[in-house]
Figure 1 (cartoon, rainbow over the protein chains, first blue to last red):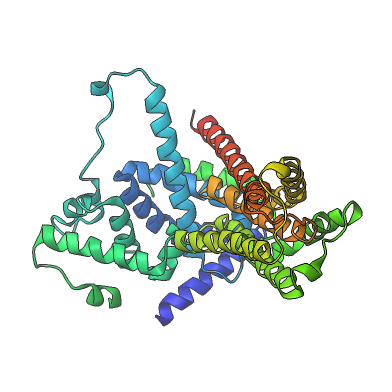
Figure 2 (figure 1 turned 180 degrees about the vertical axis):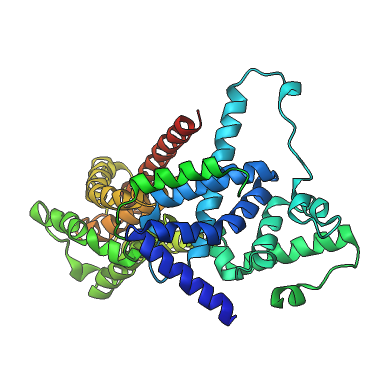
Length: 193
Length: 226
């Protein structure tokens, strides 16, 4: 917990320096945030390569919107909020494009359904099981259990209440349990881990 | 990361070229103060052309307390609209729904209580009056709507149409609280069409502004990815 607070404080200091025009602070922020952001985006897009592209787009958007970071507030929820915005915009654009394009359905590229598995190579089957969890629940579940956000932060990122975030993550865990059987830690253990 | 150094270098180069110090956004309640002069000017504008209604007939309590509550709720709606533009700090749908419901309930209930105490106006006689109220209330709300919409446009609203609706409804609620001091008509038809209608039309205008903002953002996104 102390380590998490120190890391959050360091990120906040870097962000303030970045707002002040310090390029070295951007480099440090990139080093700290690029991997979690890329993995988060890959989990949303269910495609690692797409996650990499969206991560770069996220850093550009973070740069354009850097004035929207309010000093004193945590940086990670802000950055993940922008990443989510970038993902949703890109998905809408792709949907609009596919609506206007005249390609026959069979020529459309296949979506890599099991790409989530690549994010969790150590846990056999977890990636495939996560792909079966609904998008809303999976997002809340991963934000809490993988990226360590509190339910309040998740609520602020997704525009839902803290309780709704907790419920989504809990139901996501329930679905995972059903898919994987009983070989799952309970939510309390996982949250404290 | 090492497999695509060229792309990361180009990202860093773009950011390095554009990097300038920026002033971070102030807290939403502070930004609300930025447009306070515009809001106050718009809300006292009717004093120049109209007389305050006879407050004795409805009682000072029913005149001023609901205005204070409605202004507070209007501020709440505008506060949520400004928060919607801050990534990672979006208001919950439940909070938005509860505040909208409270604001419209207060507006309708207070007007009905006023009608019970001092009924005035009817269906047939009130067409020109509800048009006048509709027009004036909208005119009072427009500067507030534009001021806040400008503040929201400088952020990154993730649900621009919802943010726009909140801006419009908040501006409408503020305008209505001011205009109620002048309008003597309290018939429910007049209130619903002239007053609540004015709030809703401002909400719709905000929603449309949000839609235009979305189109603009989409066009930019398409331009970047083309």
